[in-house]
Image (tube, rainbow, N blue to C red; front, side, top):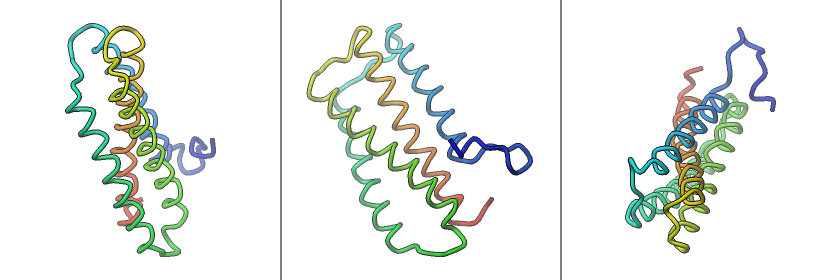
Length: 136
Protein backbone atom coordinates (compact mmCIF):
# COMPACT_ATOMS: atom_id res chain seq x y z
CA UNK A 1 0.00 0.00 0.00
CA UNK A 2 3.00 2.29 -0.07
CA UNK A 3 2.08 3.30 -3.62
CA UNK A 4 -0.83 5.36 -2.27
CA UNK A 5 1.27 7.54 0.06
CA UNK A 6 1.01 11.26 -0.52
CA UNK A 7 4.66 12.12 -0.01
CA UNK A 8 5.32 14.43 -2.93
CA UNK A 9 2.75 17.14 -3.28
CA UNK A 10 -0.14 14.72 -2.72
CA UNK A 11 0.38 12.92 -6.04
CA UNK A 12 -0.25 9.24 -6.54
CA UNK A 13 2.45 7.11 -8.03
CA UNK A 14 2.12 6.02 -11.61
CA UNK A 15 1.44 2.42 -10.53
CA UNK A 16 -1.44 3.50 -8.28
CA UNK A 17 -3.03 5.47 -11.11
CA UNK A 18 -2.58 2.44 -13.40
CA UNK A 19 -4.42 0.21 -10.92
CA UNK A 20 -7.33 2.64 -10.55
CA UNK A 21 -7.71 3.10 -14.32
CA UNK A 22 -7.56 -0.67 -14.84
CA UNK A 23 -10.26 -1.36 -12.24
CA UNK A 24 -12.54 1.19 -13.88
CA UNK A 25 -11.99 -0.33 -17.33
CA UNK A 26 -12.62 -3.83 -15.98
CA UNK A 27 -15.93 -2.85 -14.38
CA UNK A 28 -17.06 -1.06 -17.53
CA UNK A 29 -16.17 -4.07 -19.70
CA UNK A 30 -18.03 -6.47 -17.40
CA UNK A 31 -21.11 -4.27 -17.51
CA UNK A 32 -20.97 -3.91 -21.29
CA UNK A 33 -20.63 -7.66 -21.77
CA UNK A 34 -23.48 -8.40 -19.39
CA UNK A 35 -25.67 -5.82 -21.17
CA UNK A 36 -24.89 -7.48 -24.50
CA UNK A 37 -23.21 -4.47 -26.02
CA UNK A 38 -19.88 -6.21 -26.62
CA UNK A 39 -19.02 -9.82 -27.42
CA UNK A 40 -15.95 -11.86 -26.65
CA UNK A 41 -14.57 -14.20 -29.29
CA UNK A 42 -11.88 -16.87 -28.98
CA UNK A 43 -9.70 -14.82 -31.35
CA UNK A 44 -9.79 -11.87 -28.94
CA UNK A 45 -8.86 -14.17 -26.05
CA UNK A 46 -6.02 -15.70 -28.07
CA UNK A 47 -4.67 -12.27 -28.96
CA UNK A 48 -4.77 -11.15 -25.31
CA UNK A 49 -2.96 -14.35 -24.31
CA UNK A 50 -0.29 -13.93 -27.01
CA UNK A 51 0.28 -10.25 -26.18
CA UNK A 52 0.74 -11.09 -22.49
CA UNK A 53 3.24 -13.85 -23.24
CA UNK A 54 5.13 -11.53 -25.62
CA UNK A 55 5.20 -8.82 -22.96
CA UNK A 56 6.58 -11.32 -20.45
CA UNK A 57 9.47 -12.19 -22.74
CA UNK A 58 10.17 -8.52 -23.52
CA UNK A 59 9.98 -7.58 -19.84
CA UNK A 60 12.46 -10.25 -18.85
CA UNK A 61 14.93 -9.07 -21.48
CA UNK A 62 14.45 -5.38 -20.67
CA UNK A 63 14.89 -5.77 -16.92
CA UNK A 64 17.92 -8.00 -17.39
CA UNK A 65 19.60 -5.38 -19.59
CA UNK A 66 18.61 -2.33 -17.55
CA UNK A 67 20.29 -2.02 -14.16
CA UNK A 68 20.75 1.68 -13.47
CA UNK A 69 20.79 2.84 -9.86
CA UNK A 70 18.77 6.00 -10.45
CA UNK A 71 15.76 4.10 -11.81
CA UNK A 72 15.62 1.24 -9.29
CA UNK A 73 13.00 2.85 -7.05
CA UNK A 74 10.39 3.45 -9.73
CA UNK A 75 11.49 0.41 -11.74
CA UNK A 76 10.50 -2.00 -8.98
CA UNK A 77 6.93 -0.69 -8.68
CA UNK A 78 6.47 -0.51 -12.44
CA UNK A 79 7.78 -4.02 -13.02
CA UNK A 80 5.48 -5.39 -10.31
CA UNK A 81 2.51 -3.69 -11.96
CA UNK A 82 3.36 -5.02 -15.42
CA UNK A 83 4.06 -8.50 -14.04
CA UNK A 84 0.71 -8.59 -12.24
CA UNK A 85 -0.98 -7.53 -15.48
CA UNK A 86 0.83 -10.23 -17.45
CA UNK A 87 0.05 -13.03 -15.02
CA UNK A 88 -3.60 -12.02 -14.63
CA UNK A 89 -4.08 -11.70 -18.38
CA UNK A 90 -2.54 -15.10 -19.04
CA UNK A 91 -4.60 -16.72 -16.28
CA UNK A 92 -7.99 -15.29 -17.23
CA UNK A 93 -7.45 -15.63 -20.99
CA UNK A 94 -6.56 -19.28 -20.47
CA UNK A 95 -9.59 -19.86 -18.22
CA UNK A 96 -11.93 -18.23 -20.73
CA UNK A 97 -10.38 -20.10 -23.65
CA UNK A 98 -10.55 -23.48 -21.90
CA UNK A 99 -14.03 -23.16 -20.40
CA UNK A 100 -15.75 -21.23 -23.17
CA UNK A 101 -17.80 -19.30 -20.61
CA UNK A 102 -18.32 -15.87 -22.13
CA UNK A 103 -21.93 -15.17 -21.24
CA UNK A 104 -23.98 -14.60 -18.13
CA UNK A 105 -22.83 -13.23 -14.82
CA UNK A 106 -19.82 -15.53 -14.38
CA UNK A 107 -18.59 -14.84 -17.91
CA UNK A 108 -19.03 -11.11 -17.41
CA UNK A 109 -17.00 -11.21 -14.21
CA UNK A 110 -14.23 -13.25 -15.86
CA UNK A 111 -14.09 -10.96 -18.89
CA UNK A 112 -14.08 -7.92 -16.58
CA UNK A 113 -11.11 -9.39 -14.73
CA UNK A 114 -9.37 -10.14 -18.03
CA UNK A 115 -9.85 -6.54 -19.17
CA UNK A 116 -8.70 -5.28 -15.77
CA UNK A 117 -5.43 -7.20 -15.98
CA UNK A 118 -4.89 -6.41 -19.67
CA UNK A 119 -5.40 -2.71 -18.96
CA UNK A 120 -3.02 -3.07 -16.00
CA UNK A 121 -0.49 -4.59 -18.39
CA UNK A 122 -0.76 -1.64 -20.76
CA UNK A 123 -0.87 1.14 -18.16
CA UNK A 124 1.94 -0.52 -16.22
CA UNK A 125 4.00 -0.54 -19.39
CA UNK A 126 3.42 3.20 -19.71
CA UNK A 127 4.67 3.61 -16.13
CA UNK A 128 7.70 1.45 -16.92
CA UNK A 129 8.58 3.53 -19.98
CA UNK A 130 8.11 6.70 -17.94
CA UNK A 131 10.45 5.34 -15.27
CA UNK A 132 13.13 4.18 -17.70
CA UNK A 133 13.18 7.48 -19.57
CA UNK A 134 13.36 9.44 -16.31
CA UNK A 135 10.17 11.47 -16.85
CA UNK A 136 9.09 11.84 -13.25
